[in-house]
Length: 137
Image (cartoon, rainbow, N blue to C red):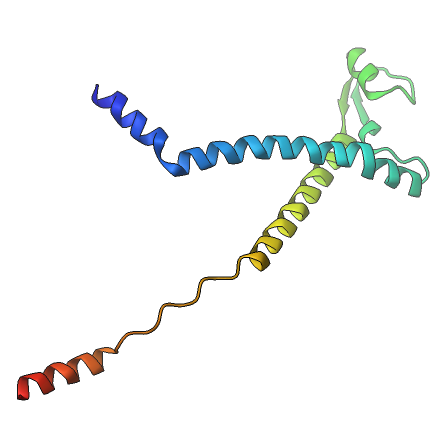
């Protein structure tokens, strides 16, 4: 029973529960950022740069694939491909997520100013002087 009670105590700690909630919210937030990148930002970038779509960019390392073959079909055909477009999209997802988190933290810091510093107590010298004066009396 000792291990079970230790496990219950561990799980009941606030940090573990906070971490679990953070992971779940983070996963959901990641899906939102992926959708933002894939469905909104990348089409705009593609429009600005003349139809550039990073997710469809790849280099064939081995195998025979006709030019212009979609990435999924190239992989299905057994070609070994270096899908650098997917990597660029993942980097953009990360940068967007980092920026949004930065903005959230910045807004939270503005909304919740730091607690005022505790009033300073007497210094060591003041305390020692007070003790000395008490001893003299």
